[in-house]
Length: 157
Image 1 (cartoon, rainbow, N blue to C red):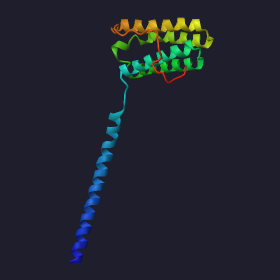
Image 2 (image 1 turned 60 degrees about the vertical axis):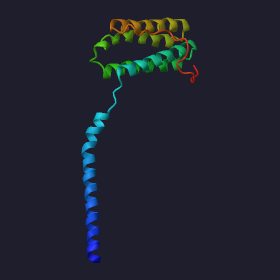
Image 3 (image 1 turned 90 degrees about the vertical axis):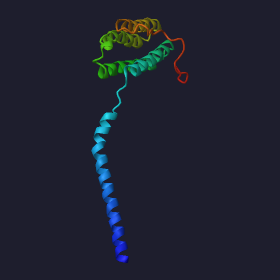
Image 4 (image 1 turned 90 degrees about the horizontal axis):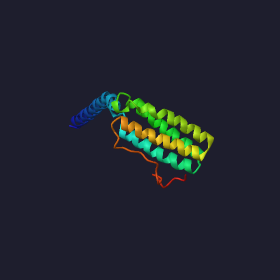
């Protein structure tokens, strides 16, 4: 009788191990396709929101003559433009996105010169170019303006 109990327990144990191995194999087979399908691609609205955030930060850094922060915000703007070009190059509404590149270059110059009036003028050109791009691409209802308050109050500009 003891032998039958021991054999029964062993059979149950072997069955459990086999089931676990089968489950692990199934998980391994599904892991690669699952990871590939979960890759996050930010949407155009997410990236445009990021542009708007850094456009705001750029303004307050510049008018407070915090030139290192202004340069950082400008770099973040450029990264967002690059992401738009990388992830959504085929989208019709982004075919005019390259028009933003000259004003971004101009902003680098104004920041390098550390001249507040040049900065303000360059920022206006950048903002107007954003709106021109929106107009041309059919999104004229999205109008960007010079901010009147920081989007985040927990940063020193």
